[in-house]
Image (cartoon, rainbow, N blue to C red; front, top):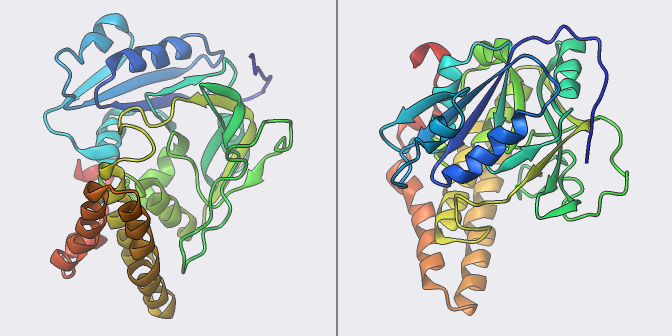
Length: 316
């Protein structure tokens, strides 16, 4: 499954930041796949987000080459990655989920894309499902409708038959593998840790795009994703809560005027009731409570100024 490439870049340092919350053995598999890559100048930073496992530090024992950071509390996806950014020395930082494995030549195309165009703020590779390695998860993002918040990943669920074999502008990067220039981080700031889980990378990409940078899907970079190990699968009460809460939070932070008003109405009068009703029909009361709790969070935090804040690298 090789995906090597030749390039004339000077191999600037890339800091690879990965957050783990449990499943240390999965992190080890990711690091082992990184040992085989052809790009010669990386550092690997693993942030343990207060894992409930008894021995999360086994990652450091099995992979002594990594920089290992231990958080005393679970800071969420954004907060954990932000800790990694604090110590990163690279010109570029690649956020890489710990439940991924990479092709040997995946990094060169990402770096080359950014080196050749300084107006690019984010790049993401092609992503296939690890357990269905011929099936796509991501080949770029279609624009998300600002009212309905519907959009989605290009290629999702499709067999990869070469239909996405060119680099394309994308509305967003993919949180499982997203590389950003450290210069952009200094200008725009870090991910907003108030999201904790889900939508933080969409919010960040929106801010980066608003600052004038482009986002690209890079076709000849490939990784494999073991979807949602740390959150218990694609459907869970935890996911339902944060997806509801953070979809509204994303709207509050990034939209104004009539668009914002219509989008909020759509979420409160259409999307949330529809999702809750479908779950109720299936007889899952825990999910219904999660949807309601996600909405009520905003009632309690409607005047909270922290909703609109984003941490800076110098704040850490």
